[in-house]
Image 1: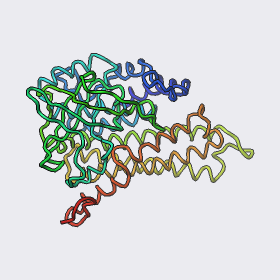
Image 2: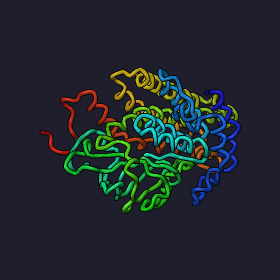
Image 3: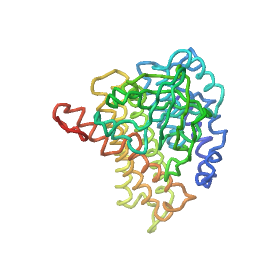
Image 4: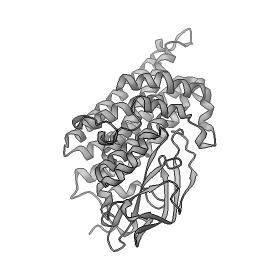
Length: 399
C-alpha cells in the first residue's frame, strides 16, 4: 500500500501540483483538481477505503485498520494535503455508515460510491454557533445544535445551517446532524440523517476560500424545509455518541496527514540545502542550516512515534485511545508547523515565491492547527479525559 501510494504521489500528484500551481487559486472550485487525480486514487484502491467487501470494497485487517489509514494518509498528504482530506472524508464517512447505517442504505449508496470516481462524502456537524467546543464534552443548553429536524408523516424536515464542512462544496452524499429533542441536552437529543445532494430544500451556499488545503473544497450548507425520507435516519437522538466511529480514527488520520506535510517539507528542504550555494559552500555545510535540518528531522520522528502509538491504541481498543488520539492530533499540528517554518526560512527568498511551492506547504501546515478541533479545545479534551472528576466543565454550571 505504501509503495502504491508513494508511486501515485511521485508520478501523478506531485507533478500536477508543481506544474499547475496556479490551479490552487482558481476561483471556480470545481475546476481546481482535474478528474484524473481522483481516477488515479481509484486505480490504486484508496478512494473508497472503509467500504465493506460485501458491497464491493475490500476490508482492511481489523487489528491494524487505523494504522493502515494513517500510513496511506501520510503518503497522500506528502503530495497534497487537500487531496488527502478529500479522500479521508470518504474513508471516515464510509466507516461511520458501515457501523450505523441500515442495510438498505448501505446497499443503495455504497455501490454508487464505488461506481463514480468523483463521488465524495461529507460529514456535517459544525454550525455557525458551535464547532469543536461541543466535544469537551458538556451538555449545557447553550451548546445545543441549532439545526433542527422534525418528523412529519413519512419524512423528517430539516432546517438550519452547517459551515466549514470538508468536501461540503462538491460531495454527493452528506451525513447531517440535527436536534430532534429540545427537551434533552445535545448529547441525548441529536440525530443523524443521510441527505443526498439535490434533495429539495438543501442548498450548497458557497465554497469557503481557505488559505491552505485548497484542493479540498470546504463548503457552507443551508437546509430550508429539507425533506428526507424517514428511513434516511441513521441514529435517533444519540448520534453524537455514535460519531466516535468517525472522530476516533479521524484524529489519527488528521495527525498522519499533518505528518505527510512535514515529510514533504523535510524532503524539499533537504534537497534544497544540498544543492544550493550560499557564502561559497552548499547550504548544508553551514552549521546554522544543519542544526535546523536536524531539528526538523527530530520533530518529524517524534510526531510519527506518537501517531503510531495512538493508532495502535485505537486498533487494540486500549482505554487510553481517546487521550492518545487527541495528543497525536494536537502535537502533530504544533510540531509540523515548526517544521514548515524551518522549511520556509531555509529556502530564503525562494520560500516566499508561489511558483516554488514551499509557501504552500507552510499554508497547509497552518490549517491543521484548527482542523478537527482547535489546539486549545484539544488540550481541554485531553485533561478532561485524564482527570474527569476534577477537570473544569468549561461551559455551563459546575454543579
